[in-house]
Image (cartoon, rainbow, N blue to C red; front, side, top):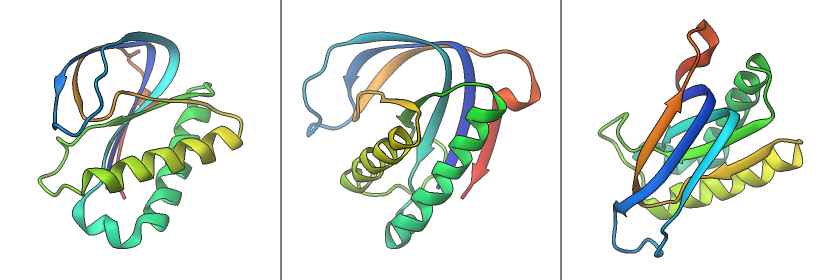
Length: 136
């Protein structure tokens, strides 16, 4: 798994087009403030150890959220960090499970529309813990 975490004073997106045909029809535009955005790529080799990878990802997201003094987390599927790609159904399962676990820990969690290309606006401050990359 590749995990790029960016703390954003403001993060906004707008759906543009489907990345795969199976995605449900969504047309939305949203904006969030004081949020940690996890740009997440589940790799093919992670599918055999999904539970372990999920736990490590959640620990990283919680740590980065605490360091950036936020309880708001966005999970964004970002299949551009590696050439190895997991099956989309496994990615969605991971995201739903992670959202549930993070929410039960007191975080406000959202997911960007799954299976879509998005116009993004990322307003990230220039301090060292605002951008963190992990290879899990």
